Length: 293
Image (cartoon, rainbow, N blue to C red; front, side, top):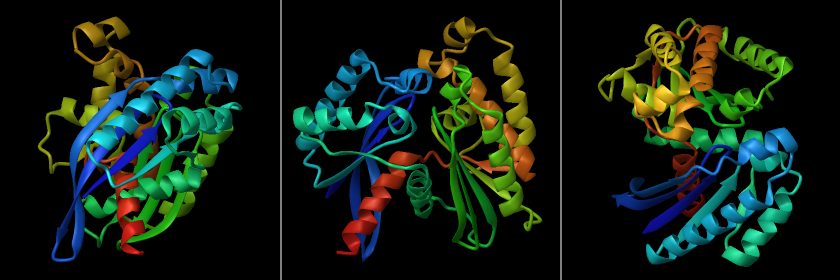
C-alpha cells in the first residue's frame, strides 16, 4: 500500500510517496520517493497578496505532474496541503479550482493551527524519550509552527507569520515576533529542561553541515557558529563555494536566525533534527484517518 503527501509551501512544493508497512498491526511507513520543486510562491503572496499568472501556471503544471506520478506509483490515498503563501494569496481559491479542474487533484488550504497539528503528527516516527519535554520548531518560507509536548502529550501548538521568505522580503512584523516570544514564555516556563526538535529543509541542511552523527543533537552554540560561518560568505559564494542550492543559499540565513532566537527564548541548549517535516505529518495523518475507518 502507498500513500502520497503534497506539501505546497512558500518556498518549495514537495511530493512524498511512502510505502505503508503493517508489522503485526503496528503501522509505519518508509519513504519511497521525494520530489521537490522550488516555486517560491511566497515572493508573490507576501509582497502582493496575489500569486502571479506565471507562478499559478507553474503550480498547476507541478500538480498535474504529481498527480500523474501518484497514478504511476499506484498511490491508494493522498492528501495535498497548501500553507502560508496560499493562505495569504487573494487568488488562492481561484488557483485551487484550476488545479481541481486541470490536474484532477484536490488541494486544501490549511490554516496555521491545523498545519502545526499535521507537523506534530510526524512525532510518532521520531525516536525520542517520551519522559522529556520538547518544543517542535518547524520553520518554513512563510510561517513558523511551534508545538510543545511533554510526557508524549501535546500541550500547545501555534503558527506564526514568521518565515524565511517573509524575512528576506521584509514582511515579518515586530508584533508577530512578540507574540511568538509570549507563546514560548507562557508554555515553556514550567520546564526546568526543554529540548528542541527541528523540522524543515533548512535545519536538515544545517545539521548536515554540522557533520554530527544522526542520533546526536545540534547544540545552540554550534548553530550560532554555523550562522556566523554561513554569514561570512556572500550569497554568490554560498552557491559556488559551499555548493548550496540557489533556493537554499539565501533562506538558510534567516532560518538560522529563527531557530537560534526560538532556542534562546525557550532556553533550549540542544535541538534534535530527525529529518521529518510537513509531508511526513501528512502521511501519518492519512494512516490515522484510514485506521479509524
